[in-house]
Amino acid sequence: MTDPTPNPAAPAPKVTHMYILVDRSGSMESIASDVIGGFNQTVAEQAQNGPDAKLTVIQFDSQDPANVMYAGIPIAEMTKLDRTSYQPRGGTPLLDATGLLIGRIRVEQAARVATGLQTEDVMFVTITDGQENESREYNLARVTQLIEQCKAEGWTFVYLSEAITAYADAAAMGYDHGSTQQFQANTDGSGKAFASMSRGMSNMRDKKRAMESYDSALFFETGKDAEDE
Image (cartoon, rainbow, N blue to C red; front, side, top):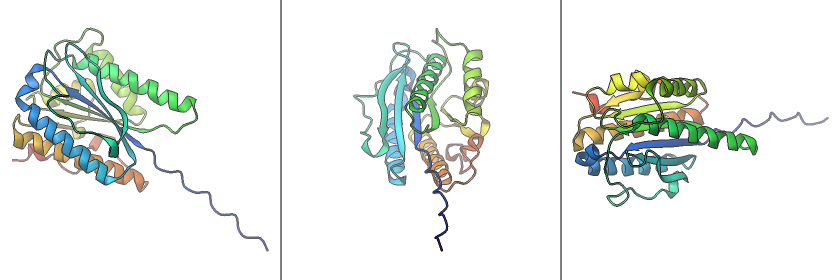
């Protein structure tokens, strides 16, 4: 009597690739230290959550809308952001930065498919303090179209902004209300924003590992600490 054929193993969960788009415009200077601290704490917490994540960090301003700080680094190998690597300057070409990063991600994921590698779960996070004012290549309609297309492909889009118009700005580009958070431009506000973002990241990663359903439109289902009274 032959042994029954074992069931094929379930496919391994995809690696989560977090693409972080950080506003480096001059107005970010007032919260630069808070952004650095919150970013570093988030990376440390995500490294503790597990090795199945990678990080690409792009900072943008009017002098360079796509400055690559880190590219596809395993989460455990990330080095800290500091005042040398993050120096606010210039204007805010948010649309150009967003469109250029989406293009970069699409090229990277297509290259994985072409070489027989599994695609990654894409998380696209924008951290800013204000509105668009310097873009030359992309307009709002084009960026909104790109984001909607990528959401349909399963990407998760997250928007953190200090601007009082954060929700209107995010919605205009296609970010979901449940994945947007506004914070106050101080240590407490930014700290809470990063803490809830890290918790949302862990929630997403935990659910995907467990093969549980996950709603990318509700990234902040675990709470928006920066908006609590």
